Image (cartoon, rainbow, N blue to C red; front, side, top):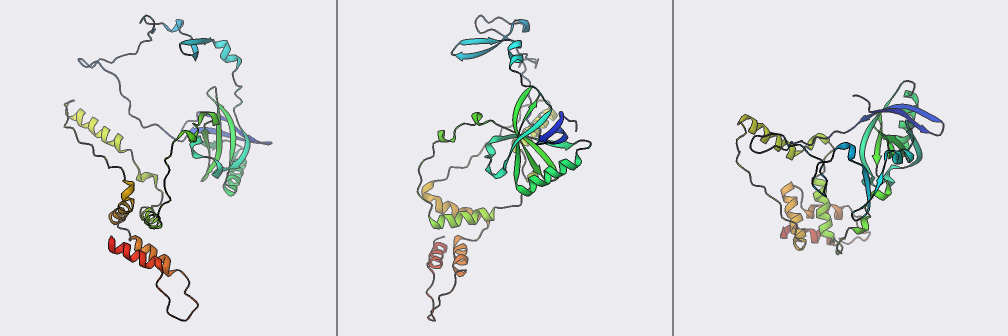
Length: 298
């Protein structure tokens, strides 16, 4: 794998030479626009909105729209004036608890590969980050643009994950969440039982892009058929959950998943309670009775 950037991690007086390698790749299918009659590729032209005329590159400038249809032009020397000096260094500013960072800030990971003479310091930083659960918050310039980033431990590797700055995150208060009453105890028990039933050990290979796979099968079929039109398939969608019938939906989900009904969960919780100290026979716990009625209803 070819490195896209070489430099070093720096914090305090520590300097660790590293190479940056992409940890992700885009699997998005790319398509060309064609003329329908003869499948000739269609090219894009730079056309001015005012008169519809094509504009050559030498006549194009960059402008910032500060008001509707009002622009200020920025020249090459303007960009050079505010250019951030590329230091080839991942400058760690702070160390923070990784659990404190909202995942919405992360968006692109890179592997950090130790270079010659950096293996010892690399292993030391990786071990400290793993032991403390912290991440190094850094700034780094990649391809002329400055990024906020986090240096994190990932198994035997250090990972640099690019982050969004605070002003790039939309304020969550703009999302309107309707008021809802507190979930009933029985609904919570069934929901927890369903989550436990559907819990699996994390294995990324279990999850594939079904849309891309189906699209590639369609493309292969078209290639083999000489580009003929293939029969269409209907697309099904699941109905939204009706809040009024939430308990019944949970019961049905538990049945479909092959899970124990909520009565088993409630009975297990009731049997775990300590017995009364009095010698008389203890009364049946309410959770057991309620769970039994729930089982009968189910």
